[in-house]
Amino acid sequence: MSTPSTRKAVVAGVDGSDTAAAAARWAGAVAARIDAPLHLVHSMPSEGIFYSEAAVLIQSQMMDQLRKDGEKVLSDVADLVRADHPDVEVQSFIGPGPAASAVLEAADDARVAVLGATGAGAIENFLLGSTVVRVANHASCPVVVWRGDTSNPLPDHRPVVVGVDGSELSSTAVRYAFEYAQLFGTPLIAVHSWIGDAALGVGATAALVDWDAVAESESAVLAESLAGWHEKYPDVEVRRVIDRGPAAKVLLSHLPDAQLAVVGSHGRNQFTAALLGSTSQNLLHNAPCPVLVARKI
Image 1 (cartoon, helix red, strand yellow):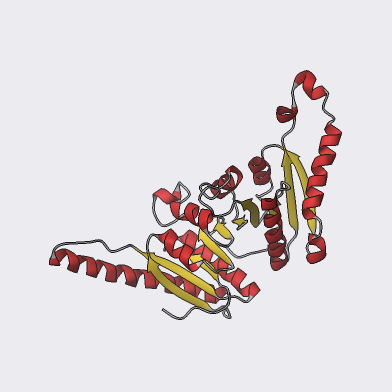
Image 2: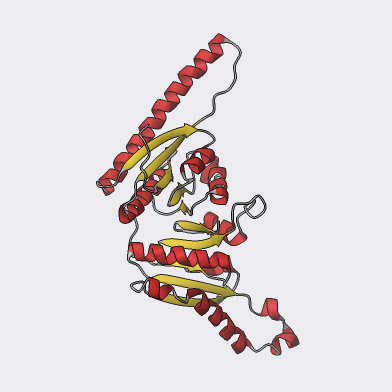
């Protein structure tokens, strides 16, 4: 194992799946753009406790084979990244399991951690893996859950989409959205959603609501959330979208032509980090593109 670079790295979890390899290639593209090293992380199962010499020998042989397999997985992915970006500094690490612990340790001082939405296990092909959820909940840096076409994983010219609700959390998401839109040289679509008649009244009550005033107020929320960022990122073209409906549903409707979705999430204390918000969870399961969870630490 080589000594880690002193520069903050981009970290990618690697488990042998096609999705993880695609995620690592995407992470390599980000590392190339920000001139950061890429750390590829693979985990080994924890060794058990056995009480016979035969069992110890069998486990030792098994662990040796697992390490060789892990080194091959890491080597293959490193070759893919270097083929995309020959100048990226790639380092590989094998840590003790569980996988989430290995990635969280590696990402403790990282610029961003990147994971594939589904892992090598059959069950994880249908459900978002527990590793992804734990890392997204507890990492000390932004987490990108990569989804998309594994044969074409690199950033392109499609827009970045960010969910904006006026909160401090969404302010953090807006910051990262501008950063990545500039990094990729793409437009930014800032999406603000609000609930209409169902939340503010129906029937006679709804008739008393000044919907034009409500729409104007919601527009002001979006404008205030974006204020000041254009000066910091003058080259980023911004499109503002205000739609009625649940946040996740509205955001998902703007993602088929996007290359990255950015959402905010809570901090890492034991209460707020217990579960990702419903919007983040929905996007992590259903978005057609990578999703960046921008956490307020």
